[in-house]
Image 1 (tube, helix red, strand yellow):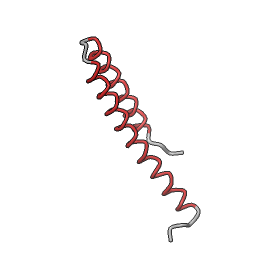
Image 2 (cartoon, one colour):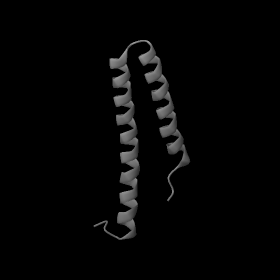
Image 3 (cartoon, helix red, strand yellow):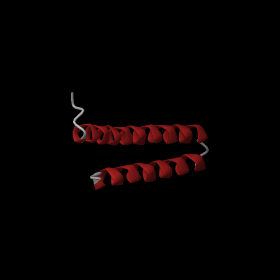
Image 4 (cartoon, one colour):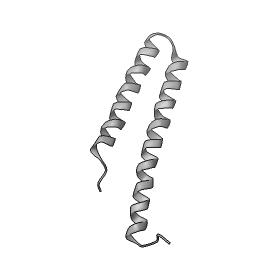
Length: 68
């Protein structure tokens, strides 16, 4: 479908970093900060996926000539 492989690696990298930070923060007893890191990481990845979906819809519109 043409999804850039770098985007997939970026999402995986953010996931690994967030998981590492959450583990460290939970070991330090900072569960509240760990929850915030998880939430921020999720929102960041959600915006990345939303941009990919937006590009997909633009390509679908161009294929079916709905550019108006």
